[in-house]
Amino acid sequence: MANQFKTTVLLAALTVLIVLIGRMFGGNQGMTIAFIFALVMNFGSYWFSDKIVLAMYRAKELTPSEAPEIHEMVADLAQKAGIPKPRVYLIPTETPNAFATGRNPEHAVVAVTQGIVRLLQPDELKGVLGHELGHVRNRDILIGSVAATLAGVVMMLASMARFAAIFGIGGSDDDRGGGNIIGLILMSILAPLAAMLIQMAVSRSREYLADETGARLAGNPRSLASALEKLANASKRMPMQDAKPATAHMFTVNPLSGGGLASWFSTHPPTEERVRRLRTMASPQSA
Figure 1 (cartoon, one colour):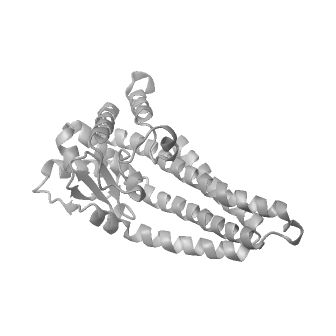
Figure 2 (cartoon, rainbow, N blue to C red):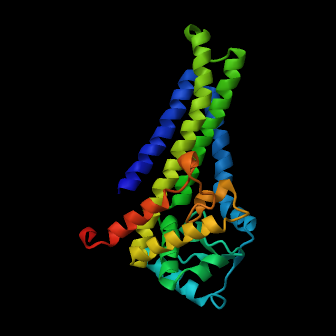
Figure 3 (tube, helix red, strand yellow):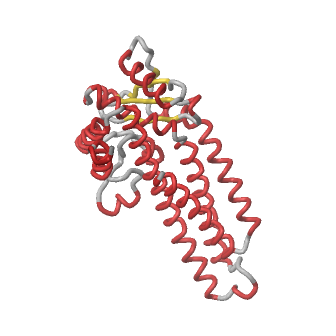
């Protein structure tokens, strides 16, 4: 419930940011056009995201005869989650990871890499699959699309604000002095940064929620915690060479993980914190 509330607050913050830029820029018509344009782009991405990302990673569908154990796990988890059984795909890479995609539970796909199948024990793999079905059950792809749409609007308005500042356009008649131009320039620089940070925070809150949901579906938070540690360590030793920043948020662990300042822009929470929360779930006190 806390993660759901946090997501709502963050999405509201993005909306407020749009309103503030629109008021400062003084162009309601321009704000409307930017919103419609961003909505169309993200709607297309949402609608065709599964086909695009599966082709991007050269994933091929696995039949039940090719991977009976995985299909059995997915079927069991989907039944517990109350959703249709997703299709199962295999990504031809030895870097261990997984992701879920699809515009809704009725069109969901779960993809696993060759490496994750070889690295994890069955109970750990079930925990990861539970995490990914948690994303499907919680409709995180839709939420991610909404966040991307709002962030996209902020980026477009910021670009319009920079253009307005250069040519002295925008703002009310009383505010078109140098102070307003400086304000537009600052807003055009800071707003995209704020939007990016908020969008990353939305993604991180959904990861925590998927961890919790997946652990409950699989029935063993410790198995998912152990799997996350193995995946994070393996990804550091053997990074996914063809991973794309635009799809990094989809994976169980961030294939583009980094420390320091880069962690501010990470789509995933720190693995250590995810593991700590899962082990707290598994402790007798949390029962």
